[in-house]
Each structure stands twice: as structure tokens, then as C-alpha cells.
Amino acid sequence: MKKTMLSLAAALVCTSALAQSGTPMVGDRPLVQVKPKGMKTAAAAPAKPQSMGAKLQACLEIEDGSKERLDCYDAVIPPAAKPKAMKAKAVADCKFTKEQDERLACFNGFVENMPKLPKS
Image (cartoon, rainbow, N blue to C red):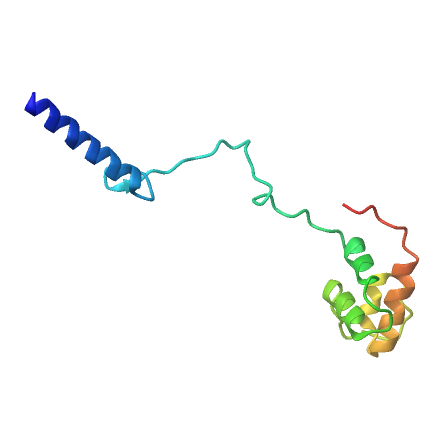
């Protein structure tokens, strides 16, 4: 009877010690749990990439005529050296305009005339 009680007490002490440890262990290695492929959490889902048009239209929310709005446009379409004098035929051509005020007016002219994209 004493052996049974001693064995039972030893088993309880061992299981309670295992229950108190932070990470479940298998031998000397931590237990790893793998989720099925179909289960994704909302936080782990990658953000849907925005189109260039959506990024440019987001810049319209910044105060008009401000350096911040121009910086927003420049982040989407970085400025570049103009190969030769020409009028912008597309929004991407605005990057060739050297003067900030002219570049901002160029972007505004194209983006304000774009059809509104659906918000996602």
C-alpha cells in the first residue's frame, strides 16, 4: 500500500510540475503545434496591395497645395530628370516636371479627373 501511495504522489508531483512549465515539452524539445493550411488569422493575412491609381487618389486627402501632398505623389511616382521639354500626356509624365508647384499642379490635373475607384 505504501508503494502505491508513493507512486501516486510521485506521479502527481511530476504532472503538476509539467503543467506549470510555460511551454509543453516533448523530451528536451518544445512541443510545436502546426495549424492546417486553410486556417489563417486576420492579423496574419497580408494586406492587399493598392493600385497606383488608388495610391494617387489617397494623396487627394492631404491639404491641396501642400508639400505633404507633393511628397505623397512623389512616393508613388518618384521625380526623374526630364529628357527634353514636353507636355505631360499621362500621370507618370509628371515626374519629369522639376518645379514643385508645377509638378503638384500636373499630378492634381490628372488625379482629380480620374474616375473614383471603389474603397476596399
